[in-house]
Amino acid sequence: MNTTTLPTLSQDELKTLVGQAALRYVVPGEIVGVGTGSTVNKFIDALATMKDQIKGAVSSSIASTERLQAAGITVFDSNAVDRLSVYIDGADEIDGSGYMIKGGGAALTREKIIAAQSDRFICIADESKLVQTLGVFPLPVEVIPMSSQRIISQFQAKGGQAAVRLKDGKPLVTDNGQHIVDVRGLQITDPVAFEAEVSQWPGVVTVGVFAFQRAHVCLLGTATGVKTLDFI
Image (cartoon, rainbow, N blue to C red; front, side):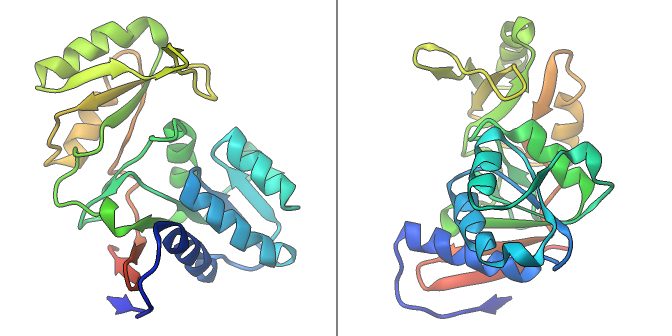
């Protein structure tokens, strides 16, 4: 574990710091996978400083695509790219093995697709996201709308409390035209088995447990700087 000691920083400064630290994993001359969220926005801002050294990016959301394009970075469709050397994204939770919960920004399906397309997943997060057992953060599950109530019942049978995520009083609609079910009260002690099981439920598009596409490295922002956690 490598630690860079710095004066105490605010959360926004930490996001900027880990966003900048992620630049060292970007391979010059290649296309970089880019995730979604407030921490990733800091990475996009940092990536703009070396935009002439990369071919462009593949993005996990409309919001990130717009930010990348505004920074002058070319955005490619994932189908136009065989592989990516690196995918850089945040997490809502990450454990000591690199397993994550993602989807707070409702982009989990596209995030998982790009992660699967990439040789390495670099997670950028602050230390509050590091947990012993996944499940403190509500688990996002992208679902086909007609299946939401049955899926809610299935999570209730597992001891969770689930509800459709709302925006302005109506079900949030993802970039894929689907809904999000958020599940509270779970303790996910076996992320691999959990992801494999829930992924098979009819109507589930993507479950927000990233076990098969876990992080290889986490750049963790702490009160005194960035810690590098290597998982694989």
